[in-house]
Length: 130
Image 1 (spheres, helix red, strand yellow):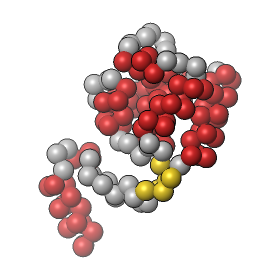
Image 2 (cartoon, helix red, strand yellow):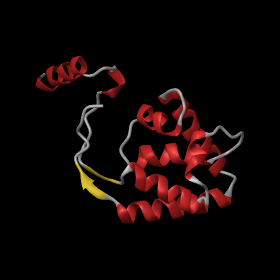
Image 3 (tube, helix red, strand yellow):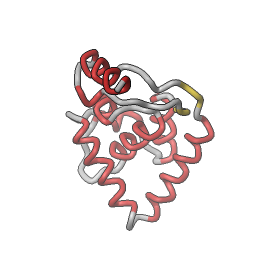
């Protein structure tokens, strides 16, 4: 009962309903660190994030890693990778997951990215507004 009231209070204080969540303390990497690691491993220039490129996997990988290792919501990741919504990020993440099933090179790259980011994580409290 008390948690329901607290959740309702949180709903009223956020701009968008999907921003409300109970998050536990976790270890995260900074956005800059995620971008640097992904660009390093994929050998990409950081300005590639601002350009659309057909069949490019870079922005989808960045979006996935931002959500997974920086603690961002999909909507927050969308702003960084230059797509319109959290739904677009969800579709990009799905694209990465589907492509990984067949692309061993992508599997190796993601494993390298995840290894580096796990090594560099620092502990922060993710219970925050928006």
